[in-house]
Amino acid sequence: MSFNIIITLFQRAILQGIPLLYGSTGEILTEKSGNLNLGIPGIMYVGGISGVIGAFLYEESLVNKADANAFLAIIIPLLCSVIGSALCGLIYSFLTVTLRANQNVTGLALTTFGVGFGNFFGASLVKLTGSAVPSVALSTTSNFFRTTLPFADKLGVIGDIFFSYGFMTYLAIGIALVCAYVIKKTRVGLHLRAVGENPATADAAGISVNKYKYLATVIGSVIAGFGGLFYVMDYANGVWSNEGFGDRGWLAIALVIFSLWKPNLAIVGSILFGGLYIVYLFIPGLSMSTQELFKMLPYVVTIVVLIITSARKKRENQPPQSLGLSYFREER
Image 1: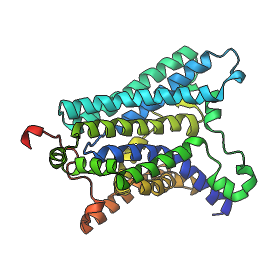
Image 2 (image 1 turned 30 degrees about the vertical axis):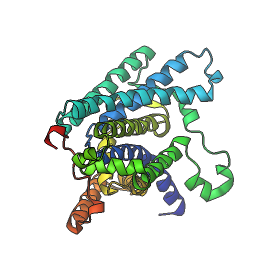
Image 3 (image 1 turned 60 degrees about the vertical axis):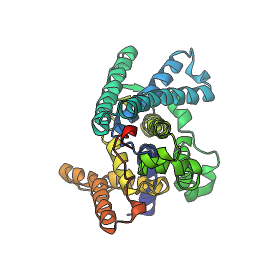
Image 4 (image 1 turned 135 degrees about the horizontal axis):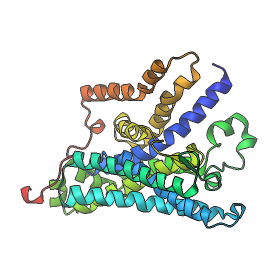
């Protein structure tokens, strides 16, 4: 394998892994509060289609798309994505925290709802555009999202590997590092971990369990929603097509386990998962069935990590003790 191919593989692994990094960072933040949100795949769909709707309405308002304002072209989809994914987080929180519904069932229902929501509005936008193909192209908005750093071309190989991406790539890494710092080094993170480990003890210490669960879930949902927006605007060049996400939402949840509930490790894990997911494209002569086997590699690696960490039984590498369990204050 030549050096140029290795560089190309690394670049595509990063682009493939960034949606996973957004999804896993949001889910880690959520799970630290004790909420197991299996609705992340659906929330990523909602975040993506919400941004697409905002970008579509903005582009349609322009007489000449060449007059598009960079700030508006970026901020409108971002705000729409925040609103859509935050609403999903609120729905999940209301059902599981306030009404104490089963978290697994609620999360799976949210995934089904999110995928259906995205497909419905995606198909509606296709009809509005009158496109002959079942997709919506937002190239004007996408170009702003995909604009690379101006000095990347002057740095040669270093620029190609580290600086040839849109701003949402660096935003994902920054959010993951900030979340890692907050969870590990701040009083807010300490309270969040206390709520996830033992909500009754946290409640007795004067920590508002419901507040932390709501905030962690809603903020985590917004972060995950950015993963859907990145996929459409950056990875897919502004093209929305129904069912286009594939199983990336579930890969993001698998990455949570692989990274041992640590957002900083999820950065490395996302690149690894992204590379494993597409490595078959760089191996000539593979049959279709063999390609599908290669796509299983991220899940296989996750299972291996889960087995190893379970055998070692180190507490810091385990999920929160109250993960997936509703908190009943009356039973304290």
